[in-house]
Image (cartoon, rainbow, N blue to C red; front, side, top):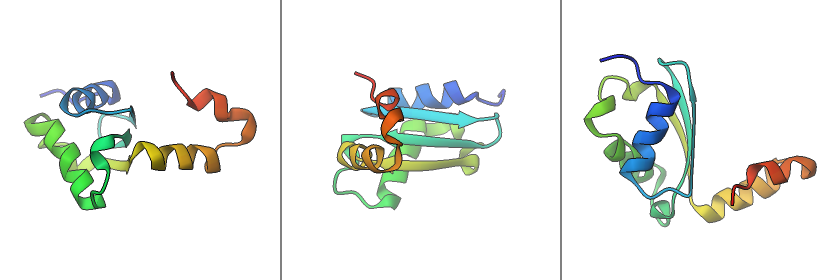
Length: 96
């Protein structure tokens, strides 16, 4: 199987679970995903990651070790966006 692109990983996650926001960066070998989903409400970090791995399924069994992720609930994401983004750049992060 060809190495998946960041866009492939992003679409796999988006297809596999209900996400408010998914962003994946990577070079085919190592990926970093930011995933925002209401499904993460009340779940531990481990449970959140297991949910994402479940969404990816067998497609990434080989590459899964190369995926780092930040899993956030919509509320956590809103809080993080509000606190870590410079005031002038905030608008660029909200897709409506």
